[in-house]
Length: 318
Picture 1 (cartoon, rainbow, N blue to C red):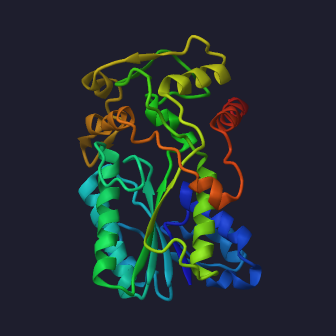
Picture 2 (cartoon, rainbow, N blue to C red):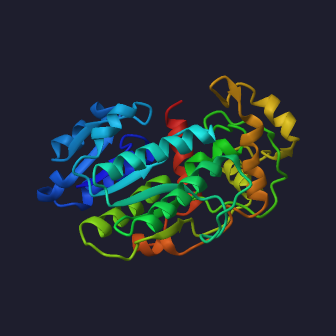
Picture 3 (tube, rainbow, N blue to C red):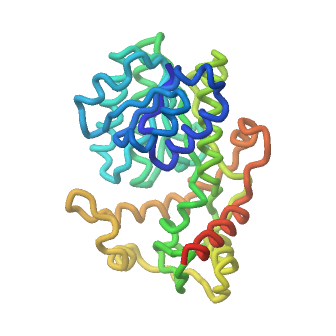
């Protein structure tokens, strides 16, 4: 079976949707979608897929979640606490291997620069890099196991995170972040196209039995690098705020500004999260690769098209 875990979040839901589209109906019983909210996958069940319940934080549930799964798409645990995040990944990988999983496609993140890079200054990338390295170590010790690491590019839909929680429905200026807006920038990419590409990779590995992606790292990016200044100018254009601008502030000022918004386990991670802007400053998100275009077989949707549609949707919901 081909498994996806967790299967009902933003990226997971996209991967599920595209797998259901590209996998023939008579083969969908070979799909296992695993989520802590299995009720959200009722439509997938009706279309013939197997739906199971499991949760990263429910260790016992992991011990049976992957039974019969040969290829597993492991989507990263949502946490800004690095040790807990990595240990959650490791625990799931170990449980999957005990149940017979032979290949893991891991959804990493598009920081760290070029695909061959194994370093990042950012807090957000730390657990991803540890997980990537752990998969390499497991494969080196067990030749019957293989992996594919997919560094999913920075979502176009995630611009609020990098613009001090700017909202398209209620735009305000200035955008106060610990960055002056100059390059290097970000190769923004539509989340649903990342989900589609990941689904196509999974289809190739499981149904077509190709080795094209075996023990490889794929960096999926948009086709153009946008500086944060250019990004904010576009946000201003689509919201009618032509006065929209960036005001560079210190990390301490930023942390005070978003106080309470990045708390995990009683600890405020705002300053650690701010390392993302240092990663951008060093070019970690500026690399453009042709990989997404090659997998999709078409040009990815331009950032400005995605943002304009998001702005229309935001206005329609007001």
